[in-house]
Length: 311
Image (cartoon, rainbow, N blue to C red; front, top):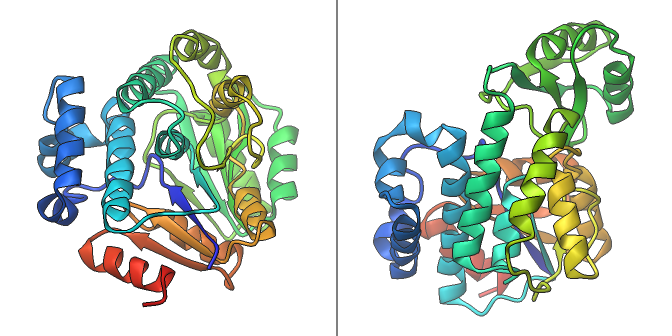
């Protein structure tokens, strides 16, 4: 059975995540210990005990990187993995590239820390907002954002599933656009619990600054193909990987296209390397015929192995 492995991004975090895998897999606890040594604080303790700190971008992004990678390592410690490709949603793309051995664990930590720092500084006045628009097709959402004539910026940022697009930009512009979306038939609008307007042009300067950090990191070509958020395509060389990571900060996440590309490659099962089930839910909305499951504990890890190898 052809399968892919995908990694979630910011928004899938939860207090106490990965506790069962941490207690039962030494490779998970060792991954967190290594991360804590690099960071200079106990990341696992923060995840288990400090919800407010966990939800701060500077901590969330590195926590999701380490949690997703530790989950992948737990799965890989039980079986030899052979995914046809991998991908990650937003921040999760870094986890996919780490799993594909594009850069080292310590360099992945450096990249994600700097990414989070720069993104937070870009909207120090808390002027950003992101809202999920439910029930409108992509073209409609794009047009309404382009037609917005008030102050500020609002753009389509995440194409997550059919009828689910996230818009991003200045807070006032986003909220005004939400009202227009409702007037044009949106079933619902959901304010996301973030203050950083990711994947829109407000992050262009941040992306330019982030390039300096990327240029200092040693990159390798992927050992497993990785589909990028920027265009749902596989890079042909290292410079292309770097360019797409920079563009990812201010360009939309093409997640629906990513899943459909996987289907075209012959993939029938998508495994979400936790924590959470966000990408599993999106996969089922994109195409109900795809098999999708998330690894969030020992039971789901075992069942994933059994299903992959049809034991």
